Image 1: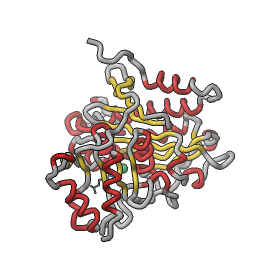
Image 2: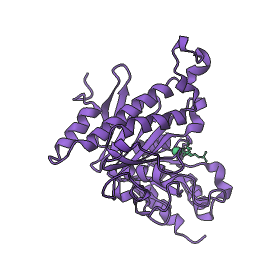
Image 3: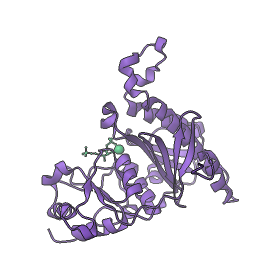
Image 4: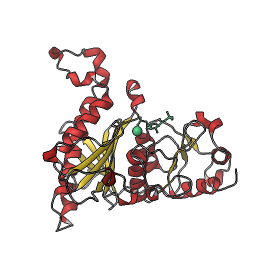
Length: 336
Ligand code: AHM
Ligand code: MG
């Protein structure tokens, strides 16, 4: 039985989207193509991670020296090398870099800015647990030349594209350019991402919550009350919720996107500004989830409305199904 009426590669999908904009120069699509290549290169190394101890690391067994490096550094370098040569980017910053990544002179005239978390959830690598890559793209605001901090530090609602690659039981590329959220699954036998989840819509309410509950005693009373509320027995409204927590934002948000519910990383006594990074993690995930019909807030405002002041700025985040995030906001707004 044929379950999917069409077989569509990610590249063809990107081209078809571009054709809807007759004035498009193709630069934006080229940049997305470069990202799909980076995703495949990172996937190739990630999928070999567990073999290092079995196969050794010599030339004879054909395991590249790169795998000796920490995978997150490998991912960082691979994305950087793939992307600056695409020629469409004037500035780049990564969770692994201190400031802007230097782009060679001849490659700096692009229209776009790329911010990325090369390997999210890297503490999970050694246990073979889902990890991911997150990216966020803005149009430059400076007129020409090498991009600056001003090009990078834009408010999330200005993003022109955002996405993530999840290296899980399958590898998937999920992205939005502001026209819905689309998901592609890698068929490793042909090396192509194939359309598997067109126009993803997040359920308006879920049955799962996702948070590092080990931090319970560090939270403010409103968060503690909200989590207690989710666990109360009240069957007509679907409670108690089930707890799911991977400790990789990409995995936890991906599940939330597909099944509904809420993912949270609040501020706590150890992390008074929250733990997750606005520019590399929260903005792109907020754009995706909003595009799928969900919500993302920091407890006081929409994530996409936060004015950034530094590349590595952290923020609390509550993201997921609109009814769940709205309910959470009610608790957060209640007096301590
Ligand atoms: P990383 O990008 O350095 O891997 O760290 C971010 C990760 C997120 O993926 C995840 O949601 C969070 O840190 C887990 O933190 P904790 O271990 O405090 O629960
Ligand atoms: Mg991360």
